[in-house]
Length: 353
Image 1 (cartoon, rainbow, N blue to C red):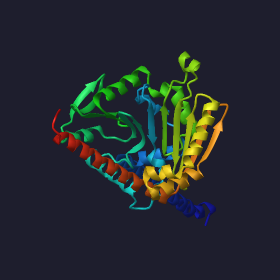
Image 2 (image 1 turned 45 degrees about the vertical axis):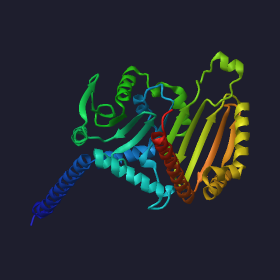
Image 3 (image 1 turned 180 degrees about the vertical axis):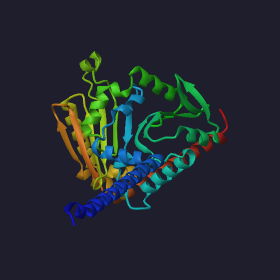
Image 4 (image 1 turned 30 degrees about the vertical axis):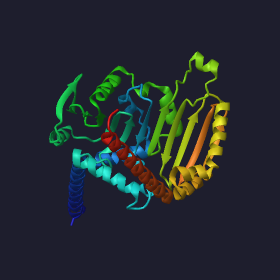
């Protein structure tokens, strides 16, 4: 038998293996494409990408472009970075409230705050969210609640006259608030007069760090004070920036920008006096929560940066303390509610002058 005839079975077997491998690769590619399509349609792909982005590139100043530049402050929430364990055990007051809010919003709008929303900005009269939103399905759901279509500068939104409005932009941005606020957001984004253009806000947020599930800034005074403020020696704080982390417990960093280094030092001394007054804390929230507040205040670290005129407060709160303070807050809110009801009832029943 010749060498050529002996090598033919080997060549045929090799070609068969190659064809089998090619079929396997084609099948694998088809499965991958199918998985990606299903993930995209169900929102899993967008959620996964957003979760990765939150872990690697959490900064998202572009979302501030939808907030009008004259707002006094905002709170930014990143659901991807929240560790619920830091807020207490399953069934705790805080976690029950979060789940109840999530369920209520999902039932009304079909939007899942824990899955569809990647970043949330809360301003005094406007909410801006980045995520995955189906405008058509939202319109169908809200039509049952008497919302109708409206339009402003080519942007469509859903409106319930005299109450609120909601807009979805490009399927990835959601605006919620009163109709004037929705329109102001559209104007600010178009004209470039949003909060994203104010360095005194963006620089402070970046200083605290976007890698936190909760981040906020409140602008209390103009970063460039008037001549009157300079001449009279105004010492009030210029801004307060805060960031909360839930990694390994609840940890908050609060930065207070004062008018000067001396003003920051005076504020530090005042806070030192206040946290040493356990009686005042007990009178504020009650003995048991007051003791917890006193312990939290005792652990807090207060430092002043003289060059920046800034007081920084670092506070750590344990999960059991979060639960205790949450219950105290609920009780206080209930008491205030009862007081209001009683006062209102008195006003209605009392004879006029």
